[in-house]
Length: 304
Image (cartoon, rainbow, N blue to C red; front, side, top):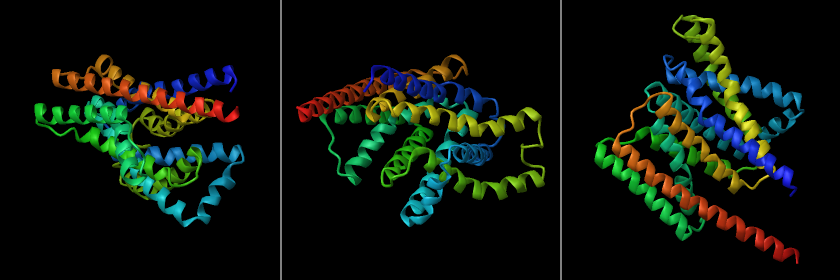
């Protein structure tokens, strides 16, 4: 791998994670007066429209059509479409009620949920470092529940839906952009009649509110596919494991944005829980780098 391509991979992946972490919560904060379900449906609809234009322009529409020759792909992608719509609605809802920190926690614990799902459904082994990281994550969640006497349902919803989403997407050989096109098309199929009804009854916000509001709803599509494009560009030049480590920039920036820009309160219990989570993340990252090193050594030995 050329050094320049490696650094390009880091740059593009970091750019995607930074975009997910800061502009997105700030963007959705501007339209938090709109019901989360309506925003999530617009997000699916406009993502489909923009993705369709882009992929047709790049001559990739045939790849999308090929999905319909596989019942397995249709079924799994229909389920993942439902999961991603719930995940989107959960994040948008979190922003609307000033709970970005809870959303941040959800994305932090996602890899831990993926580890559990991988262990039970894919028979993947759990290293001692990953097990330690997992235990710390679980302890932090239990601490929050006991200390605040409140279930962090947004974090659990976001983490669980994203974790199951990743598990199911591993079962089929579909590129992220083609998969997202089907998922957004699936959402748009159900969203369009409902959004049309909202507009016809003057209860929806698109074209019934300010021009700025309509513009923001259209832009939910671009703000969804923009970081995905750069993330996919990045992982072509670096390993998926390394990209996963860089992804942790996103929930970290969620936390920073919520605390210092959106002025969400940080209580002692949440701060302690996040410290434990960050320690768990560091342990998880160490394990990823350890595996990366072992993989590279094995590759070199096989070449010799």
